Amino acid sequence: MFTVLRSSWPLFLGLFMMMIGNGLQGTVLGLRGAMESFSTSTMSYVMACYFAGFLFASRIAPRLIRNVGHVRVFAALGSTISAILILYPTLVDPWAWMLGRVVIGFCFCGVYITCESWLNDSATNETRGKALSLYMIVQLAGIVAAQYIVLLGDVGGYVLFIIPSVLVSLAFAPILLSVGTVPAFQQTKPLPLGRLISASPLAAVGMFLLGGVFAAQFGMAAVYGAEAGMSVPQISTMISAIYIAALVLQYPIGWASDRVDRRILIVAISLIGGVLGLLGLFSGSYLCTLIAAAAIGGASNPLYALLIAYANDYLDRDDMAAASGGFLFVNGVGAVFGPILVGFVMSTVGPGGYWVYMSLLLLALGAYGLWRMTQRSRPAMAEAESAPVPYTPVLASATSVAAEVAQEVYIEAEEELEGPETSPDDPKSGSLPQDPPTIDDRKAT
Image (cartoon, rainbow, N blue to C red; front, top):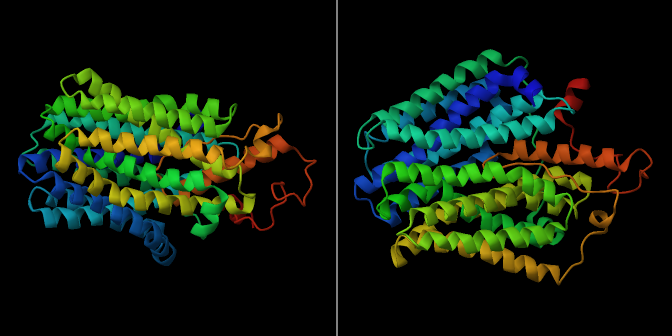
């Protein structure tokens, strides 16, 4: 991993600054909205607009990159992000904020796609998995760091909006100055939704439910904290607990997933996270709130990668990269409705509805997983002693490029496990004439 960091540190530095800017703007908007007496319902629509823009860009941004190139798209979208961040405190109006959130969601998605393409191009087959893990760590570290920058200024002023704008602008320098060759861009066509659901109903339903959980974490945590009467330092610590737990538990859960039936692990993590999340209802105890935040974050974030790995047990290799786009779409749809639904619940039952909403989604996933275990047996591949199916960490905030890279890592690891004697007629064999070409393959030709 240190080799990857040494060769690509300017790219990771730029990504780190952008993640600080993104994490900061969501928290500051939630706090500023409460200060401006915007209702919980209004703020839920504001926060949902980010995910709508992100989902929209996942289909449009690749076309822009193919038409005008990585550098132009990166510069145009990045400068737009910087401008919108400064406009937020100037145009303190829900409709203006909604429009700004749509635009920023669109722009961040396009910027992430560009950066992930460069990251994939700079990695080799041997380092791609480490690069993806480091990318995930940088994402989570940036969001956590953002929560403590909130303490440096007044939410009612301009400074906390200027800081992320400056960070995003400065992030261009290390990235653009370090990029060498511009990679060719080719995105795999998503697997049809019907085939995705039929291949793994548990993964499809789980992705939709997790989209709602992720959106509540990223968009509505600060809104909840303000409604619950927490101080700014308490809100920052609570949000940090979500993402620190996600980082700490990602690898132990990944280790376990390669050794036990993944359905059992999915069910256990969902039920434990859902039950412990209800501790947040004890609003009089800040410790209970932190435990609930860590439980929800530590359960939901690794579950995303776990569901992808579980679905791969039932997919042929030539469908794996295509499935990543379908999973992102399903997760994105859940994320768009997530803030709106949690806002409705909070408006109906009070701030505690924030924990009720996320816990119910995780408990529903656990219950559905239990039911699915009665409908289909464990795949024979996962039962084979010689084939512990690899797990690759990836976050829901990643775009289709990172998701496809994760699938490439999975395929390469599976090929190594199977060895050269596997029959080429086997749909899970190493002979893959129909697989979408990787960037390394295209460069070789």
